[in-house]
Amino acid sequence: MKNFGYSIIKQRTIDYDQFDGRLLNEVLEMEPSFKVCLSCGGCTATCSAGDLVSFNVRRMNLLLRRGETIELESEIQKCMLCGKCMLVCPRGINLRNVIMLIKKSIAKYKPINS
Amino acid sequence: MKHIVIIGGGIAGIETACALTDAGHWVTVIEKDSQLGGKLNNWSYLFPDFTPTEKITVELQAKCRDKDFSILTSTEISTILRKDGKFNIETSSDQKLEADAVVVATGYELFDAHRKEEYGYKIYDHVITSADLEELLKPGGDLTVAAGKYPKRIAFVHCVGSRDEKSGNHYCSKVCCITGVKQAIELKMRLPDAEIFCFYMDLRMYGKHFEELYREAQEKYDIQFIRGRLSEASEKIDKSLLIKSEDTLSGRPLKMNVDLMVLLVGMEAGKGTANAAKACGIGCEESGFLKTTDTFLKSNFSEQEGIFLAGSCTAPMSVNDTILHARSAAMEVKHWLSKR
Image (cartoon, rainbow over all chains, first blue to last red; front, top):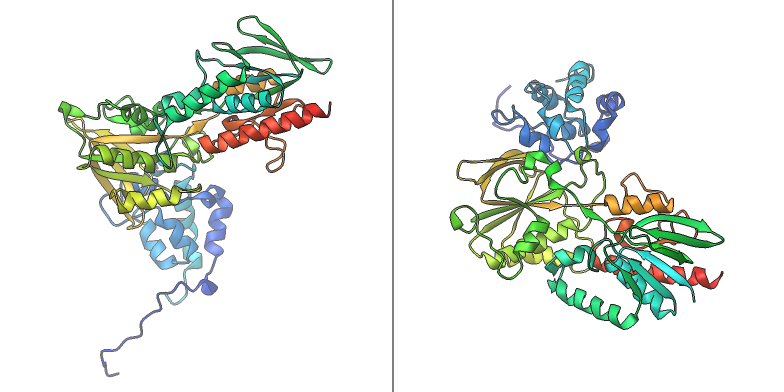
């Protein structure tokens, strides 16, 4: 097919009606402490990986809650599971377990056409 | 004449005592310190309009002189026993009092910043609390840091000991957000060349003129607000501090070198309130503050009939809210006594 230099731009709007909450629900059921994140960023501030690479552990919550499964899968690979985030968290979230749970289940919920 | 014993001689205790004396009752205030006024004595200026605290304390003292109620300073209560519809109270100085009603107005204590070790209070030289700063803001207070220089960059840390499971305090202390804004402005007035940053999680400008003061801080005083909770601080060889946070709105970790760090410490129920609760046989909430029978219409009632609650022993409260809560406590006591 001839390439005219045009492409279809994906809409930037979060289409919440398309949101697949299965992975989120599974993680919250196994690790309910994750419900209470207040997005303070203490975890990201102390993260040993985030200092060097573009890894933001606070954003795991958002990616999960917005159904950004593909980005989430590549992001969690950067975590070294050191657990410093858990020492800082003012809400006592077991973030290491959250990452492990996502790693374990994410393959099941990836969009088929990805 | 009915006799009411008030435990605590801070603003809540004094205001309740004045209102009940006005209503024709005989009142005794028991205060553990050597003078009345409570925590207000340690504060210099009040938010949101920079009223000198002295103005309030002087007025309260004048009111106390006019009203003629009994004051027992440097005294604590040991036991309270209920007998024939009266309260028999014994004090630490072995006085025996008989009361028809009791008002608990034991107030709060400031969060001990040592407990947040990662911020280095009393470990690093230039980490202070909001209470320490209030002392330094008094006329003649020395604001210099290392080598007698004035700090060039200052960080305020919000929510120290509040909204923090690690400190054991889930609740919001309510007044620290606006205290931070007030103190940032005061520092900027004293040190116009300094850069001032507030590290916050949420800014809760709930009261009258609070939001306006926040706006003024940005507009007139160039105070900068960064949304992120500090994870830790470390001291450099020149005694300046390296602090770490996430700049959550740009989504990247942030580090910053500052010359002075101010910890906005929250409120805790404290020992005085815990002791009063034990002596009176009334309950505390999970937060340690005293339980009221109802959130809306009975916020001055304890679980025990005849024992009333006033001020920040029930929850973190501003000076304003404390005075109002104390007046309503007096009204409830008066009403309750009139029915007996």
